[in-house]
Image 1: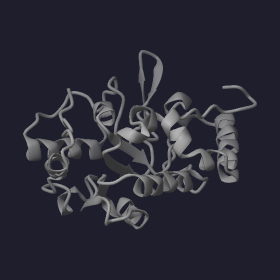
Image 2 (image 1 turned 45 degrees about the vertical axis):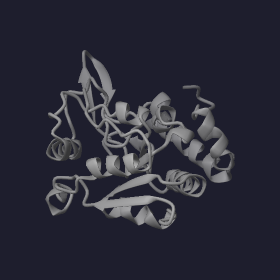
Image 3 (image 1 turned 90 degrees about the vertical axis):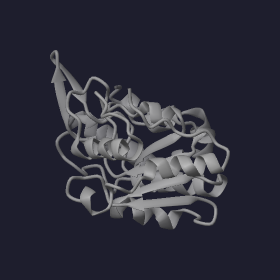
Image 4 (image 1 turned 180 degrees about the vertical axis):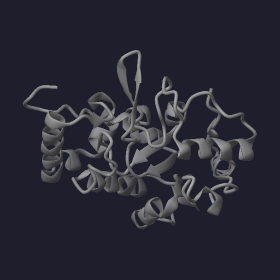
Length: 237
């Protein structure tokens, strides 16, 4: 990274949709914050992956939205190289990661119970994103080993605007709101135009309080099928 700038390139359809936000004063301040952070600390995900949710799922392709809170702040060292667990998709980890985070393990357990798919050998959810599942964290960056370290720096303003833009310009989206944080985003969504499926968070602390057995994956496909849209293949291979 240049000492003078940070490169946050977003996919073209999202660039057009979010142009006012990307040119706003708060977004300029956010980039300055990230620049200062990267001069002193490691920031995850790496710069090229920050907007992966948007690159994998262009604006016109969005059918389902899963809302997370914060990127993973952990990493692994593989063959002497740092592999961040965060790679721009909420709940997801890179294919090469040897560790599957607890919440992601529970998501896979629910899919097995709901749809019968076997537990996968990796935790990369990019196949969902390519089918129209926007895997959106509210905050898109984090300092290594410090959870929530980039909250309240502007990311939430941007991602709230993303949710509002989707709500305003699209119809029939399915929002999977897991846990109180995600459910608080319901106020940004026009419930007369879209579908909201709510459950407990898949974290080990709450999964048994309503995430397990929510059947959100089959319910999502039932809604898509009813609306003459192609179902999501939730199986991770």
